[in-house]
Every structure is written in C-alpha cells, then in structure tokens.
Length: 266
Image (tube, rainbow, N blue to C red; front, side):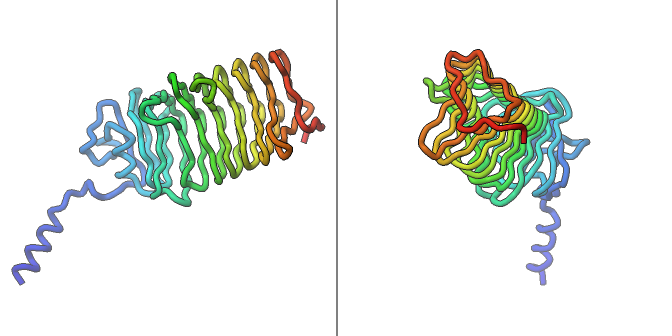
C-alpha cells in the first residue's frame, strides 16, 4: 500500500509543462522552460513544436530570430510577418502523413547546417504562405517537394547558389503549385524531374536558368513572366514538357527557350 501511495505522489508531482497545447507562442524574450502559453511564451520554435498538439499552431509574438526548427508532427508555424529563422526547417519522420503550414516567415539559410532549406518529407501536404527565403553561398535547394502536394503562395526565394547547381524550387514527384511567387538571382529558379508543377501569376527573373523540366515532369505556366535569365526555358529528355498558356511573358533572356506546347488560357 505504501508503495502504491508513493507512486501516486510521484505521478502527481510531474511537471505540468509535459502536456501539449493546441496553440502555443514564442517571443524573443521568452523562456524555453515555459509552457509556451500566451502568458508564458517560449523563446524558440524548436522547443514550441514539442509543446504543441499535433494539428495545432505556433505564433510569434514579436520580432526576433527563432533559430532552426525540426518538425515531428503536423503543425502550423506563423511568424506574424516579423519572425526570422536562421538555418533550416527540417521535417522528421514523426510528421508522416500530416499537413505542415509555414506562414509569414523569413528564412535565412545556413548551408553548413543543411543543404535543403525546407523539404516536404515525409508529410502529405506542405503549404507555404507569405514566406521569404534568402540563400547563402553553397545553398543547394530552397524548397524540395517529393511525392506530396505542395503549394507556395506569395513566396520569395533568392540567392540559392551552389557552383551552378543551386535550385530555388525543386519538384521530384507529386504535385507542386506556385502562385504570386518571385524567384530571383538563383542558379535555377524552378526544376522538375517528376510530377506536375503549375506556376501562376509569378515572376522568374535574373537566374542562370529560369524553368527546367526533365523527363517525365510536366510544368504548366500561366500569367507568368520569365525574363532576364541566362536561359528562360529548358527541356531534358523526350518526356519532359513545359506547357505555356498564351498569357505568359517570356522575353529578354539571353536564350528564351521554347515550350513544348503553346496554348490558349486554361
């Protein structure tokens, strides 16, 4: 009986901070030992993830650099338009089959930590909304989507350069859509090696390569400007396709390149 009572007392004495909350908060002046509630915010997104219920949301309260973050569950991270992440956003196996939403963030990549700034593995859905990604020397990939459904809305990516091999947005299977995006000063702005990639109302400028499709990938361009690149459009392999609707503007590149199909607006 004494042993049972002792066990019960020990359980009651466990810290309450081990519980998770559906909505948590971070602040530049926060404390990672706190519970990440609005009144007691944490200091980093990385710690806040572990204190947030799967499917929940983390919000930044004020301006700050919140470091790299590893995500092991479906979650929304909202930087409020003033939060910075220096390093990378890594999605781990625990997030398998879930949805990750990244919103209102600035990401400054650090190549010595990770060659891929953001990748979808292993989630089913990855959504970026109002995100700015700035590369550093040697950054290889800005966003990698493989075998999932990924969407980018109002995303700006620049300076992803790695000896000519840097790619701002890479699709290696699944479906990827870009809307109102700006990709500038990268080795390659968009590269697809498998799957279907759709670009709408976007600007692709001042890259070495603007849009690259390799067999068996299909890229569809609508209401998009491709200009000031060394090569505008390029294809590799007989199964590669770039479909250009008649409302695109592909001009002013050293070599504009040609789509496999020019058609009327969808």
